[in-house]
Image (tube, rainbow over all chains, first blue to last red; front, side, top):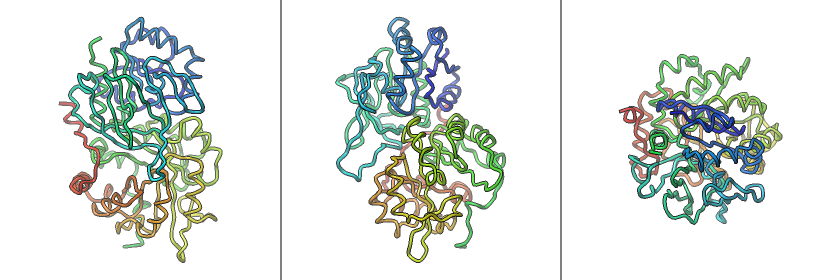
Length: 205
Length: 246
């Protein structure tokens, strides 16, 4: 079992790597096509600006590589935080930017009229597990995960979505065959997150 | 006891810390870990980052790191060593470009703006450089200014209360707190779980920080968490690493 963590220069991957190594999985931080295709799982990390991330991804031709890995080579992919948003169709961060379009979701900013409601949404918050979930296997309903984000995803998909509520419901996670994403940071969510990562690693292909 | 400042009381170096504190265990009583380097002279970012790497191994919660971060490369080193956020105090005041570059590269959430203040003749003065230099703006004005840069969080520390264990400076802050639209971490003064509860119940306080309980009172952290939960304050619940390994 080997995990490729996609390197497009914007990851903060030390803790993802330590979490994986804690659950006994080898990982490699890479943007080399051959290594990504040889891996058993792909993690798309990311913090920072959506537009910058997409530019980097396109510059390194990682968009085509990721799509080929997922669609043709059946390698499961997990996007984390910005990485999850990048799997979606678009974001309004810094104007309008198209995403990878692997998952049907759009990303917009939290925008509250009440100045008492703070952005970013930061801290532990609980998630409604979707039914028949692979990611949340053995994780109890409404478990806490760590969020830190100013943009949130919404989707018209109905199955496989885990919701979190911060004044409004937004997509906390999705799972569709080989395509997974979490808005929260499993690598920063204590045992709940470790278990979720392990579920992603252990899933049957 | 009011004059004792535990924050700056030397208790040992990092290896002492590792030996006496099991961070893997402590992590299950807290939501986030903040590590501040309060060395005044001869700071080394490389030594600090190496220490961070060691300390945060098997700590799976957000880690914020501060003290002496003055450049993009300092921040980058810390973020590649297991830190998720950097805590900036002096640079927050005198290096706007650094703040903006960090936000552009890593996003707003990467910056915790640390603000040290003390009340003198009824005025809330802001201090930088380890609490040594007073700046011109008062607390209210300063917070207004730093909020314009849209940083992720504000770590608000009362110099006078820090280390006293007598409770947070809630009374003098309440009107300012209501005007802040950035998440606030309240720091300085917590000495027992009632102080933490008082802080958390305050409108517009999003988190409470403590160094005192953590360093000096044995197993009071897990107990404090229990007490807070008993007060129906909604904290996250996690099982321990031991239960995960089994």
